Length: 519
Image: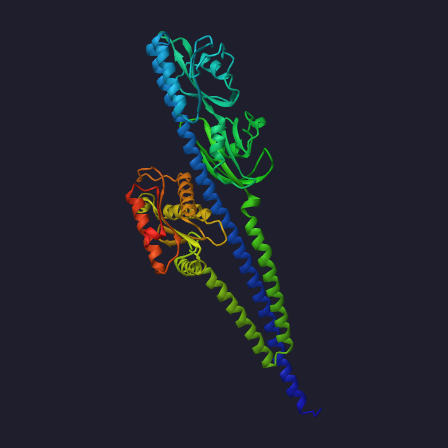
């Protein structure tokens, strides 16, 4: 090699070394940034899932508390009436007969009420809702002993006991009866069927490992889903929910580990106003994050593969830094990755950001496709349009944040109706939703619509400006054979039926066959 070329090569080598070092540093920094962004996105998704479930369990606890308060207020009102009758009119002769008839009427029209009784000061059965009172004495019951030794006139909620008249588990709700001189004159008792609460709780979806709890605020367990009779009456005062309630107050939400089965769950509890009772709803952390973990495993493999490809490409670029062709090839690969990401973003654009349902654009595309398919095959087709009743008043009263939360819960109920792979639930606009039901006749579409209406009502979302007192849904349903009519005729027909449902009083389904609605 000529001597004159050595300094030139040395100069090129000096220039190349910083460039290689900067390239390595840049590659490492980019990999760390990508890993950090990915980790942050996973964490954000995890927190979002937990927050969404916390809102759901909190709303469920609110609904459970409202149901329990209603049941105990009914018992309270019955007791107040009974005590007033007994202390004023007595229970002998015609007065006792009238009270017995009144008990029979209440028992026949109150699903939660199991039995009604008046006991004398000695514990004997004086008046009951039974056709023939048995010769029994209840002076040994805890609630009887309580009123015998306490002069307060408040309603007493006792621990669950097994009814002596029917053998079922009941919750005793009682009040003291005084004689004219203020001495102890007996006890008025209403028993609530524990199974009634169980049937109500079974309507809620809390997952396979979720739970719903009803307990006295001293920690005495009254009902726990899944039901285990051996747990009824168990002392749970040292459990995590009651420990949290003592420190955090009457309402709370937290991730806690159950003292019964050791499962970690997200609990939301509420103390009932005016009654010594607590309700709680919980979903297991494992089930809440199950989908998230599945996403983590799938995406981690993708990200790991992407990082491996990036490192491999960077090493090749560093080794062949002076070969422009290879650099351009890597840039083309980056462009292809960007196109894939853009395609993924386009897919996300088909979803409604608030509710997670299909948006209107995807709905219109799917409607056109399904109607065309139904015309070709001659199959039936169903379309549901539904609208949240008095939603503007709901927003005005509770605010837009609560309104958005309401729409999310309603959307979840509507999505539950679109269960088949070909069905599509979409947010049509504002508080209006749509459900596409391929290969579905009028009877099936009406069944889906009525189930959706019932599910929304079962959410028991408070709505003070609605005559129903809660959020309800009106639905228009059109179904049948698809003819040569324009696609918009189906939407117009369903919308007209939706208007009929609202005009007819709301919280109902208006339906018609396509041959009649479209012509």
